[in-house]
Image (tube, rainbow, N blue to C red; front, side, top):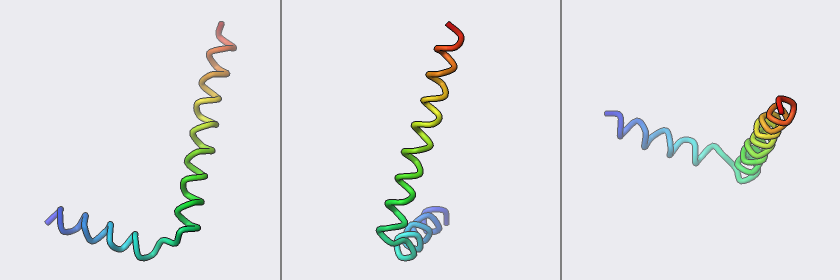
Length: 48
C-alpha cells in the first residue's frame, strides 16, 4: 500500500511542478542553507 502511495505522490508531484518551480525551490533551499550555516559560523565566532 505505501509503495503504491509513494509512487503516486512522486508521479503527481512530477506532473504539477514546472522547471521554474523546481529551480525556485532549490534556490530557496540554497539560501536557507547559507543562512543557517552562516548563523552557526557567526555564533561560533562570537563565542570564541
